[in-house]
Amino acid sequence: MQDQIDQYTAEINAFAPANADELETFRIKFLGTKGLIKDLFEQFKNVGPEEKRTFGKVLNQFKQLAEAKYNELKETHNSEPTTQNSDIDLTLPGDGFQVGSRHPLSLVRNEIIDIFKRLGFVVAEGPEIEDDWHNFSALNFPEEHPARDMQDTFFIKKNAGKDDIALRTHTSSVQVRMMENGKPPFRAIMPGRVYRNEAISARAHCFFHQVEGLYIDENVSFADLKQTLYHFVQELYGEGTQVRFRPSYFPFTEPSAEMDISCTICKGAGCNMCKYSGWVEILGCGMVDPNVLENCGIDSKKYTGFAFGMGMERIANLKYVIRDLRLFSENDERFLKQFQTEII
Image (cartoon, rainbow, N blue to C red):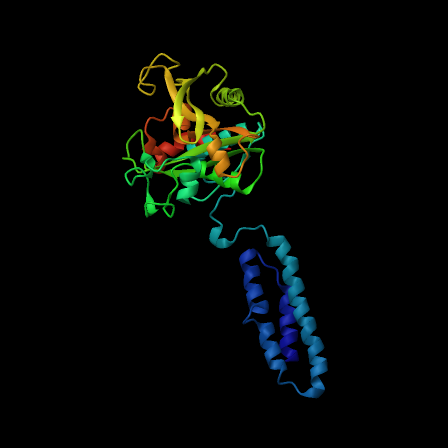
């Protein structure tokens, strides 16, 4: 064994690799799991007791010599390309790769959240599968309201009563949960996906995305609602955008209104997006009905508030001139690549 160690020691001291491949061969030969050092340690088990101390010291010194030699040479050859890759010109520029982009709905969602966050609104979320109370009853929907019919809502469990379970038709259900589980004041927006049983076309889909907002405190007025939404429109579409409110009806707000903006595509001149009227409706809003407040355990004589809701697809349509709702969910790369410059 001593003769073997002397021979290998001389080989290690004289070793001078020309490249990283030769160094790797050296490592495998001496330090690998099936290398010479491991083999010598296996032979060491058969050495007599009186010689173990002497040979053990020699063997450990030999192992340390091999490891030190390898570590020393590794620093020199660490950045050197191996022979199998020596045909690669490292001075050439790297290969290009496809740059990703944010989905237009994600861009719009983030921008809407940023605008309302600057006004003190927080973001709230809730489940997409809802019971009758949170989706309909607490929001003042009468029993005979069309939204409760099978042709308008995706019911998971239909018992013609309070045990109904359905895919939520709006994110107003998140408002109910917030009011039930907290105390005023509330100032929050609720972005999320909603579902309605509608025929899929360029202007409608069976699922889409909403952002709803809720503000409840003492002495909240319709003027607060109008000023908040006016500020939102100016921030999102620019200062020249005109706004108008039209009376409307929603079960959970009174009084209620729909808000139109001047068409951002034709600038009010008239096009198929605005049906040649120059105006496009983007959201519904109103003062929270006192019955809704009472249903959620809030004193309607002390607190008032407003709520609003908008479809993100409609907002994106006007911002990016997208005329077909189906494009948002088809994962067509030709469509999505148009938003590469919108990476955040």
